[in-house]
Amino acid sequence: MSYFRLTPILSVLTLCVVLTSCTRNSDDVWEDTKSCSRHMRRGLCTLGGKGGDSRAVQCREEFFYTDDFYGEGDFIPLEDDQRNGDMRFSEMSYPQAARSPGDPGSQIPGIEAFRDPSTIPSLAGVFRNIHFEYNQYLVKGEENKVIIKNIADYMKSHPNTFLFIEGHCDERGPEAYNLALGSRRANAVRNMMVEAGVPPEHLFTISYGKERPLVMDHHEEGWSLNRRAEFKIYQH
Image (tube, rainbow, N blue to C red; front, side, top):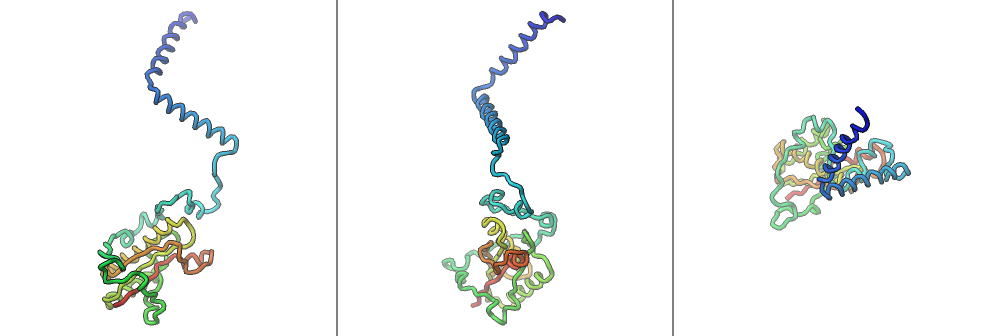
């Protein structure tokens, strides 16, 4: 087929394409223009070495704990064993008391009236701290479970005792992240005590996140001591 015979066919096809394009409204064209401009600008910035605040992640902690990654939210990334393991004591939800300590009408004073049992010789050996693994809120280890059992037994034999369970974290990570993680730690301990027979209305939780470290050391030994649940008691 000669060139002169192809020319009319090509002209008709070109006209069809142009007419089809004209059916798109002005908003479609404007969105395409903006997208094109954005991609061109990003490409030029990258070629010029101005690709933003990108940086190399040096270690696992930098990847998981950055304000840019989590922002101000309270998202808690679960480790594999928390997603696939025994969620029984951490995910159960037992309702809190109708009134919090210190609220109007409550017979229990505010947390400032609760005492640190470690300062009471007869209680120091019972109300010991519960410790958690890195980035975890499940209660693990035989020692931790024995401590919780002993506390539950004491609570059941002393029905006029009320308990605040404090959730604490180590210094790494954003404040909001650690407050949420501390809350999960405190509630995991509370759930186990309720399972052991302690009345839920005698157990309260609070999270301090990383605000109240037990030790100021900046290494794993110190961090492991700060990842904990502590107890404060009130008796009447």
